[in-house]
Length: 159
Image (cartoon, rainbow, N blue to C red; front, side, top):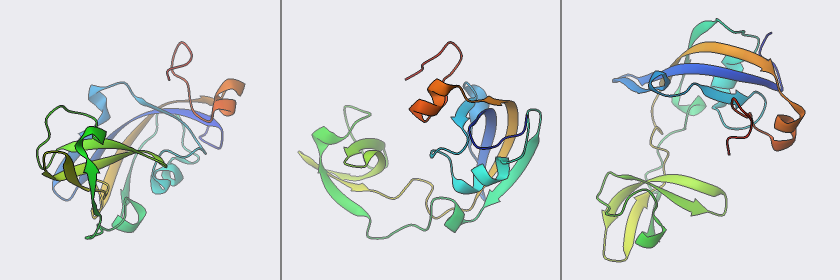
C-alpha cells in the first residue's frame, strides 16, 4: 500500500544537520502518524507521499521548509511555576509551557526567583535539516483514527 491521505504510517528516522546527528528514533518505538493530519514537517510529509513499507530515503529541508529562521526578539518572561519538565531550572534547559495554542517547547535563557526568561524559538530553528527515513508499515486508518484525527498504536488508544 502506498502512503496517501488517511494512511497510518509507521517509520524510523535519523535527524541530522551540518554538525551531525541530532536525534535517532531507533532507540525508541517507531513513529506512528496519520498521513494528511498536522504533526510532521510539511517537507517530510511531502517526501513520504506515494512511498510504501520497506522504502528508505533521505530528504533535506532548508531552514524555511524546516522550523524557519531564528527570531532574535523571541524571548519573553514567564512565571517559573508555569515551566514544566524539571524542578530546578538552569539556562539552556528545555521546558514546556502551556499556551492558548497548546503546549510549547521553550529554552530557558535566565532564571530569577519567580520569573524566567525563555526563548520561544523552536530548538531547531535556523538549521537546515536532513531526515533519513525507513518506512516500516503502511495501512488504512480506522474509522476511529479518522474521527480522532491521529493514529492509534498496537492495542488501540495510546493517548
